[in-house]
Length: 373
Ligand SMILES: [Zn+2]
Image: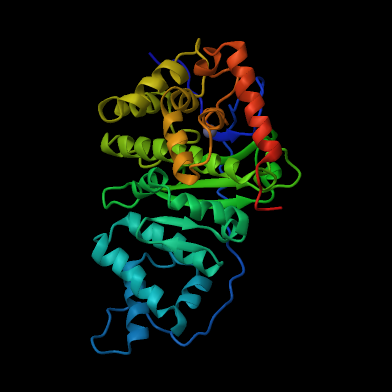
């Protein structure tokens, strides 16, 4: 029986995790749109009207018209449409059309992803239409963060998780961003977080925002690269859980197409959502039932589950990322973001075990290299 419900935002706590810093925030969507600027581009195709493509017509015009036909009117920001009309964007335009029309059968999902993707590229970001992952310019512009991301992409487990977003069956897409105004854009209880994964609230896009705010203790640019690696896999694990939750909620056909339970849902709808998990993703169902539903248990179902079941994934990813870490180092690193007083798996450690882990994390923080310096 559900009595109340809470929204969980998810984050990677900084090192040392401190007991009172229970990530238990209020909803604060702020998907941080990066709109604006762009380089304009030329307008040679801008007058193209949204009509059926004309066979044999000039390729440029035909492609843009096809895009107009495929997307809802005005779905694409005028400036982005103009930017896409440039002859320099013909290859991109073809990729987008292939992606929507031939690879995804005109699905609404693929259209929304493409719109976000084109806008991200216009702003200098990077889009992988294969894996359905967008790397925002805010993230890409931090070369040292990008270096770790690219190194992690060679780690099979990390890459496998990313690939879960690429299948034709995938309901969710993923976007990596960095926020230099992390503190002012969300509750200050997150100032210690290196990153945050925002559930898909308005669409099927899961946004992972990294904290690059110099005014916060969580600023990931101040942390060793291995912390960035841990944060990346930690957030991708959250994203994977969100993806499954979105999948469950859509499969249940309760007229819910996002995870926006903060704004729209009644307790009954939230109950339906949790029940939808039972049939598809029992592990997540189990943890949400045990923790977020049960008012007498600590909250934070995702972190409870990760601490109990996913630390081996983190350790294996670290092995792939850099085979030189010792077992003790990987053990300690796997607790980053999870070594909080309210996490049951952490509570189950002895005081000496906790102290050893925290000391090792601190030691790594002090001596391991940070490519951002
Ligand atoms: Zn987290």
